[in-house]
Image 1: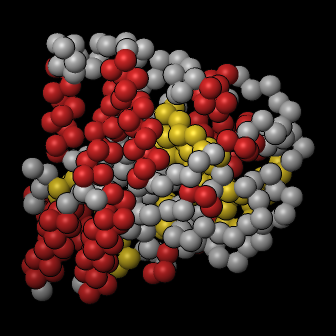
Image 2: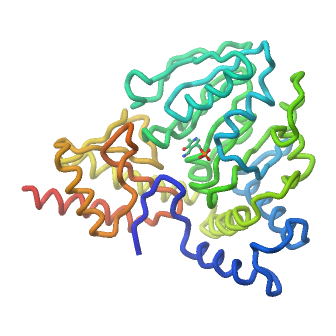
Length: 354
Ligand code: PMP
């Protein structure tokens, strides 16, 4: 078996893969999950249970709707301003990386955008801290985990305006207080399920406040009104997400997985900081638990280390092209034994260089 540190689509629990494979052959009474109607009572039960589990695992208060959408987080970059930003209004964005930049680019097509702070000049190696959010902003948007650069915001910035968060790469990895957010969205392909599904958690009262005709597929309200079945939903992706949510619940939920994620991150950062061959690329206080970015002091050793790691069954650690070096993504389903395997590979490689 491989140690899969890929950034996404990513590892899911082995038992989820097995159950998903079984459902492809026989989900219900000899029918495959791939051939049933989304209008069957069996699939309606899948959506209902997935909805219940998202609410339970994240402790979603009443007044919020959970939506199962398509189009990836990238479609949310456009749907958020279409639904929440009036033509003459301004939305505030925190620029912490490529995904934040892409989000605000879409918002600019819809209304005005105020970038409250950016760490672009430092290749996004830290999270800007001192910024002001104008009180008349339609909303404040930020990315909680910057998948490419390996930075994460653990505290929700204080604002007096609605908060919208792209949680694509850290949703379900740590406990959050949903009541601090007005809209959360996440492409599922990290901690929730396979690609093809996007989760949105919307505070109902923020909708319907702007004067714009929104096409139905892009309107959160039509998805809420139709229980995520305005059109044919991504049936298989939702089913696999449900299997994964059941797995997470059986592990003790988000608080338990957070403990494991902390242990995994600590183990790898400890080795990066100890091993003279390696160094982390981000400000220590902003280090992500999900995506650990690091380089080698001697860049010429990077290819040989990558090769050595691959020989040990360690895959997916090549860094994003804009950062270089390595990125070890450690989503919920990655066992700590895989992190130990990577740490050991770093130690043996160090010995080999001595
Ligand atoms: N936001 C973040 C934080 C991401 O990591 C990604 C993709 N990895 C996206 C947005 C874009 O997601 P998608 O491919 O689902 O559109």
